[in-house]
Length: 241
Image 1 (cartoon, rainbow, N blue to C red):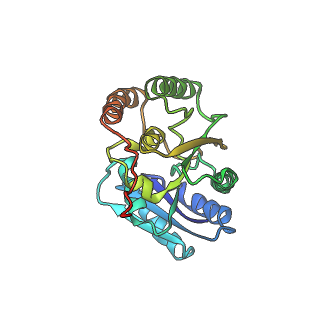
Image 2: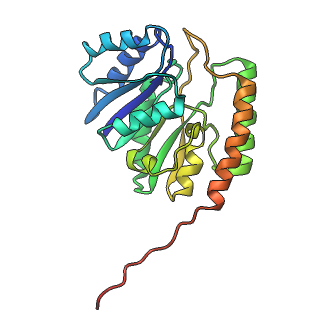
Image 3: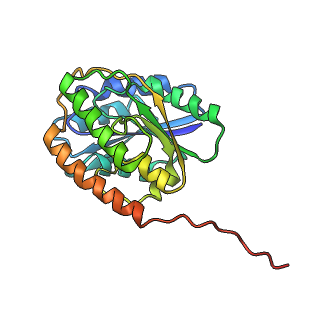
């Protein structure tokens, strides 16, 4: 499989070097791959670290947002720039394990289903505080009860999906949290695959619980609106004979 790995980063200077090395090691056996790191307006020396890494890794490409536009926009920027048909995404904090990308590829190949557009990572053993685990579980349960996306962990940054299908979805900020529901709305299949989750070694989370909850409520209502106004026609071409 040819894969473009898209990683949004914001003030992750202590994490990018090790993450790049891990991605390169994990994907060394793939048919072809590239790494696209999107620096989302970092205020530390993340960008400088990425520039130095480009000298060591020819597969690494770096894009920069002049100011921070958020995780979803950074992912979208990377996917637009990608040259390969399959996209793997990872969070830039090192908590997602790049070694799981080949596992997602293997799960896709085992399914042998052209309608399978996305494989979503499922952090079945979270390496976070008790409060973060609780708040994530609560948010996921609310989302599933409303959107019926049958995905236990949409907040996991580790995903594998088709580039063309992603770009056909209606973009909005925070779309990365609702990709399974939107892919299903567009007619594709999504499966969840258990993945590793690691403790954050450096830096701080970019999200607070309360602000994520409030934004999430608004976003869920928006996705419900999209689903109610979306239809999938059954199309057949009429023969001339």
